[in-house]
Amino acid sequence: MPWDPTRDLLTMQERLESLFGGATTGWVPAMDLVELDDHYLVTVELPGLSRADVHIDATEKSITVHGKRPRQECCPERYQQLERGQGDFSRSLHFPRPVATTGISADLNAGVLTVVVPKLVVRRQIDVE
Image 1: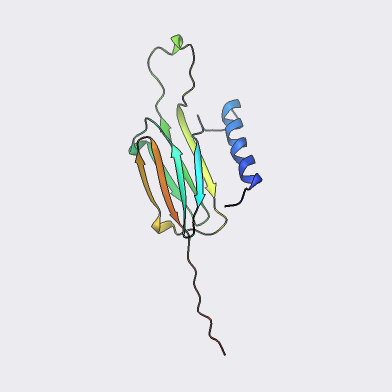
Image 2: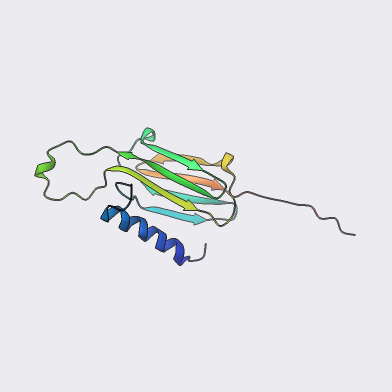
């Protein structure tokens, strides 16, 4: 997939809104997107989360990964530094071509969510006269 400055700006906006309270998300997990010939491959870093903590919504043009990491209950007044994200999160990706929502598969292994999103194949036979 060629570099898309708009997509990069939207990702930066999500992160800034999360940091400065303008967004509803509690944190923004790192996400990668790879375009292959017949599908997209999405990976999201979600260490410490279980499958029950993660949800994926899909349309023909986008997917949204959202969920929640529980807040730390141990002595919050004693933290010297707290960098790991907590609370709700949501990340959306918009695809340049339609995708086949019925063929999407996802797996969470070792803290990395891997989502395979097949491209919608529209074939048409053209008769030669």
